[in-house]
Length: 68
Image (cartoon, rainbow, N blue to C red; front, side, top):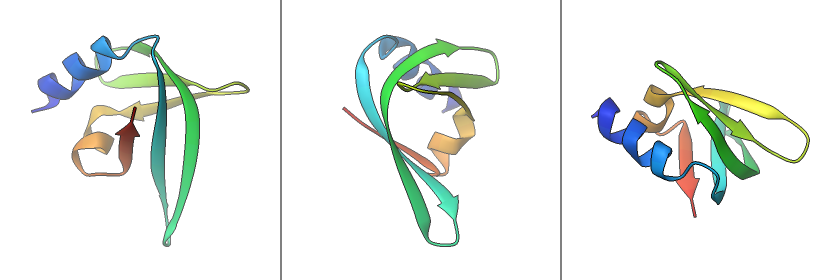
């Protein structure tokens, strides 16, 4: 399952996407940007001002939701 997520993220590399991140306590944040790179255990997301990193399991457990 994690390999499938990694492959999908590799296909999204460089494409403009929007992600929704659950930060806990019924709060969420929205970011617009693109997948910067994929590594063995994490992937990075570039916004206009920042670089964020997430694990592939964050997508699996719905802490991060990707919207095109």
